Length: 126
Image (tube, rainbow, N blue to C red):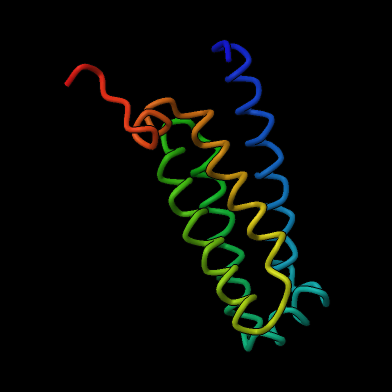
């Protein structure tokens, strides 16, 4: 993949992930009836769900910014891992969170070449 294609693909995927995460966070932060129903189903209060929404926004912003992108990747991976575990624990479908988690890692390896090299075990002659 050429560097230009890699960069464009990385930013398109980043935008899609950011859109999904921000929409989810907005529902939590505004206390929409749908979000509150989901929160009650897993035993979260409205204020706890708003805090989760804030964490979601902060992690997403860190993921978007190139300088903090790897930290954002780790935070989103942890966040989505928690979402997957919570959904499984309450016998709810976790597939959307699983797909988003996979997209986060695919996007991170496209955007951050050093991360891709570490995952593949490539060293720079050391």
